[in-house]
Length: 59
Image (tube, rainbow, N blue to C red; front, side, top):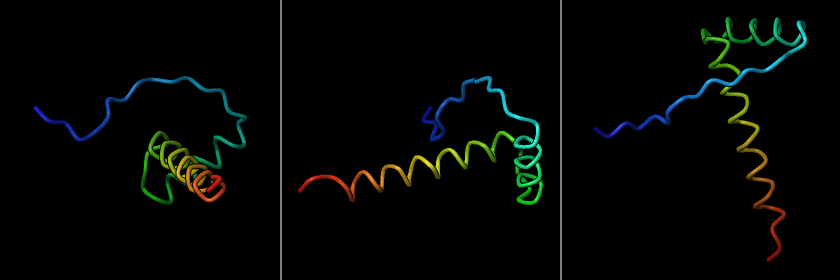
């Protein structure tokens, strides 16, 4: 069976309450779970960092 999704793993993280509340509000507004919101934001951050690394790579 070919599964296109990467297997998820659990990861515990401590957040300050105001940050968690803000993330939850953002998730609710986008109709996503808190987990999906955090995952999306981490993926976006990774993509930006990779793009910057490409731009700054010596020729």
